[in-house]
Image 1 (cartoon, rainbow, N blue to C red):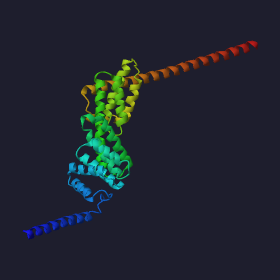
Image 2: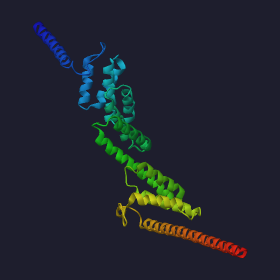
Image 3: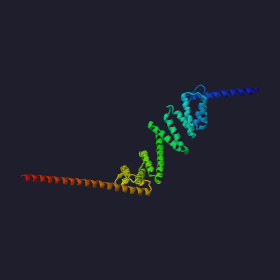
Image 4: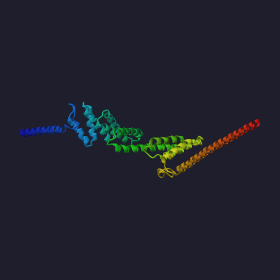
Length: 325
């Protein structure tokens, strides 16, 4: 009995020894890991375990471990920011974007992996914008972040994805503004609709086809001048001239005109306005030409009278001289 107890005790000691030996080997094998740059009061095993959980995508468990390390230990700077990054990514993958944003902002106080951290911060706002309550506010935030990233990192590996996100974001914003413009237009608040469509053209003419928006702006401007009894339609004429310069490819063909998703009512209305503007142009030109001709005739008449007067004066002078003789 005593011999058996002694044997079990020796086996137990051997198991403990082998356990620590394996742990020692594990630690030594992982000493080159970038995370194992720790202070004296934290075990490398704790960091390695958290890293292992993160790598295996056990983000909830990894998050607990990383938070414990941050809360209980005094860390060197490099390790601190590495753990902060992992915490941010854990929250990101767990779709807790508001918490992830806080940690990515901490990271951006340093220059470590700035490009990646900026992109991840932008992605937090982008994914959060799908939430109804954050929709508009966060869309503008991620647009600004991605534009900043695009400008400052022109060779970024994230550019293809960023460009796609930005295109869809601007398209959504344009459609939203168009719906506001159409609301004003359909409720006959033409001055407001004119302002909105003008903003759309100024903001998005370098990205999208804005021919349809130009048409609604011209109709709105026409209605405003008609309401104000400004029958010269001077501003409408200017807009229409610009429209022709932008979209008229040749005498009888407009760019994408057949593809414009415009109601037939609007197309007919715009056509009537165009005919009216052309008529005004012709009448104005006729009046100008007529005034010019009248002016010339008037000048000719004056010249003729002056010549006659001069001739009469000459004749009178001659007669007077003849009388003297």
